[in-house]
Amino acid sequence: MRTLEKFLRLKQTLIKRRGTFDALVVGISLIIMLPMAAVFSETLTHQRFNIQMEDMRQGFQLRSNELRLQLSDSLERLNQISLRNTAESHCTGEIYKQQMQLIQDFRYINEVALRLKSGAICHSFGEAEYSGLLPSAGDVNHYSSVDGTHYWFSAGPNFSADNGRIIVSTGSGYVWLNKGLILDVLSISKDVSFDLLDKDTQQSRFSNNRISFQLAEPLPVEKLGFSNDRLVYPFATKWGKLSALITMPANSYSRVWGGIFTTVMLSGLVLIFVFYRFAVLIYHYRRSLTTELRRSLAGGRLKVHYQPIVDIRTGQWKGAEALLRWSVKGKTIPPSVFIPLAEKSGLITEVTREVCRQVAIDHATYLWACDDFYLSINLSAADINDTTFPDFVGELFSTHDICPQKIVFEVTETSMVNKDVAVAQLQRLRDMGHQIAVDDFGTGYSSLSYLEDLPFDILKLDRSFLTLEKMESPDSIVWYVIRLAHSLNLSVIAEGLENQAQADFLYIARVSLAQGWLYSRELPIVELAQGFFAIALPPGNEVAPEIRETDLHLLMK
Image (tube, rainbow, N blue to C red; front, side):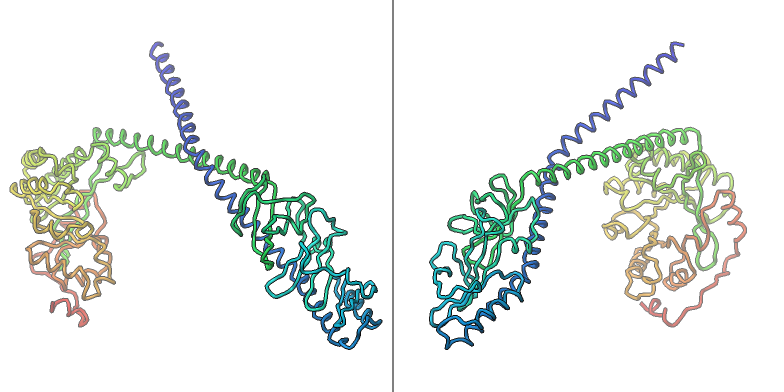
């Protein structure tokens, strides 16, 4: 009863600690995410409003195209009327008639006027010789564009949509535009203000707002900014002394920023929590796998299978590579998972020794009568650095009466971290009578120097060299590696053969040994022994593949 109570208290303590740890993770995540989310939200909001303002600017220009065309056409017709009436010194009924027709043809034109060569002014309202009706270039609201057109703006915040106007003149013609019609053309949203500001006085000459707005300081054109609690976007106009300005309430920016910030924070927290929970699951999975691996080692549940190494010329099995296999509750755990796990947990040396024990038992039980047949065992970096390993294998194989020549040890370039230690350790194994093979040759970065300095007897070609595309090329590196191995008196084994064409090329290149699915899958020890005796052939029964003329380049090198 007391034991049960202790267990329950321990369980509650662990649950509380996990809850505290989860809260700590959330708190740290918030501390990290807050400034990042703020910066990201600011960047995204600024970019969004910058695009929105630019879209409005382009929209204003597009929507005002028809207005500009009507202005240009109406002024051109007015000047043509003036040219046709150069002889007239006073306004005539025909001139008034043509002016009224012009107003009817152009819906954005309210009034027109014409200054005759004599100085007389003909206004569409019918007043003749009323010089005070026309503006002058000296007026404060006068501006000119680069094409010589003159504009007089009386459409600022103090002017309503009904009485505000813009007068435009070219040559001797004048036209009046109503502010309300222009605002209808621009179709400006209620929360958006549009102003044309005098660059010198900062006075608004045209505005859709009743409140005068002035920039606190000059801002770069087509760049989003803030001024007087407004979001502002200035851009250039065709009037040199006027700049256009789009403004919005600053709180609209704050609302969008807040929405993006909230979304970013919530999304980030969800992602972090999911990642955290996933990492916890992986951690517990790996911990449980590590525990299960320890149990499997102690309970002898790790199994060794063997993949035959075959003589390409005869088809005889000359050896086999020992491959460790592990299953948990009927599910196979791949070596790419449990081998790194064993290395990180410090179990790899014990795993290797377990493989050695099973190899010794299998050889002594099933392969003792197999002449000229060896088994190879893979070593890790920890095994190479373990100075007691040679003594262990020496005693183990001596106990099972296994000749050292029948056991080959395979090492990879990546497993030889300390070169000096590797040389000494491998030489000890060689002195005991074991052969040393370098596995996956060519996948590291120091292959040639390792071949020269380390005590190797066998070179195993990595499958990445042995694709048909590479083997069909006379300049492929695989042929140079094979010739190098032969010059160093190393035996060569090709790994991962899948088709006969690969075997034919290797035969031509005088590579006699290979392994792969072309010959056999990995086998339990009983099937390995049965297969060895089933295909055993008397010496001299070599079968050479047919050599094609296109392959002779390999023999002549």
